[in-house]
Image 1 (cartoon, rainbow, N blue to C red):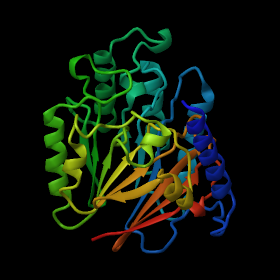
Image 2: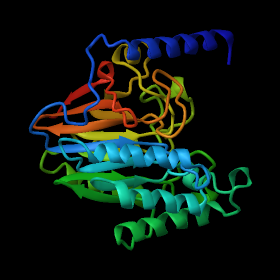
Image 3: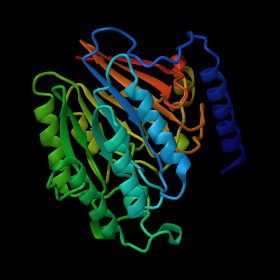
Image 4: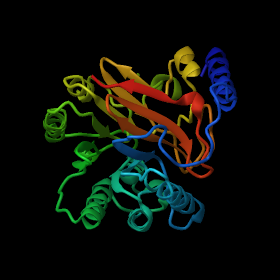
Length: 330
């Protein structure tokens, strides 16, 4: 990194932290509820829990966040956990995550695998399994949890009549330590499910651990961390349909307010060619920009004609009003 790049990133970090903490748009009291009445779908969203079986704090954080969601005045219909469930792809930690979701999740669980759950198999000598074996573990626990017989690491779930599509790494040709690998079958599945979900004009929510290249400040926060358009045409498929929301994690980007998103081109949520992209912070460990500490996520509320994204700390209950986004449906 050059000195100029360092200064630019340091300036962005400090401004993001300052502008997000100073409540110039008001204060959100630590009461779990929707922003408005008549909410049609209430979704709690977290990512990058990085649970380790022998490290109790992160699993404790996860339980506490789910307990807080359970106490919402407006019931939570679904909870998205958008990847990096574990830190080192070991089966004991994976079992702990699914156990926590079984015991504490207040709504329909939508569980996404990330690179730490598959690509990091054998990382730091914690496990000695292959990526293929790690993938098989993810599919096994998915099937046990959902009572399913899925053979792949992607699936779709309907909640209150709204479709959630989960994408995942398939370990093609040995896979990759950090990047996703996908078959044509998964891309066709995405296309088919988007067509079904948007047929009646409702929004559809695509959940994938990896962001797309150049979206939500990916090239500033962590260049090279996203899904390249010339490798997998995910972006092209998403743009064929109206009211598509793409939810990702992976970047550990923190909570950044709208002003910082515009100034440094790294928004928490943005619309590009009609598709809305939401970048979740890491929940279990430290973030890089803006609000950096653990417990961060967002609540997504669907209303007639619009969707509201509300960043929140699920450990403290603090809402980051400066960073709220509202997107109109077409």
